[in-house]
Length: 277
Image (tube, rainbow, N blue to C red):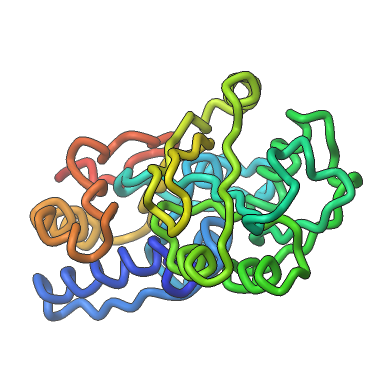
């Protein structure tokens, strides 16, 4: 289970899948397009996929049967920690919106899943706003970019590692600004949501945006069904770590799935196959 088409998650794990097949020709791998963490875990739950990418808090909610998985825990295990996935909040370059605090009465295009259900209300609450103060459309990343481009949304938001191809295309064609979060609000949000931490989207990542953008991020992890074969999980981890030098060619941040980050963000049980490696 990956992410939206052309996203960092999809690109990274399509590439990792090829490396796994290269090392283990008897394994057939396929990366599914999805809306992200929640859908990936649901697909693990119903057996559509065996592995999936999930943000720290979503994986914990699933394993513990809380939040969107209330009363229905999913048997998943941690395989590897990887790169930071960070808030991308973007508006047309000529917009009068300078911060989340300016969103009252605006039209928001918000990615489906945890972003729309949990992160967006949290962000608004930090600025003394609620979901009733805005008009929200929950949709996929490409549709978010199209809505901002066409003027059907004043503000788009998606949580993803950089560089996101659809957002990069929008920046290059229409021209956008990325919104930062000031230190006071970062501190306030992190205090109540410790899975978040301050993150930077470096200047120059997207066309026309030369300054660093200060946002919130959380770690992206590879998870699997807890009943996955121990040897298979061991071999997947082994391939990812031993092909470290190849991962940067897959995606600029893919090599953050490495030994140093392997257990970072592990708020759920580590799969025995991963622990063995």
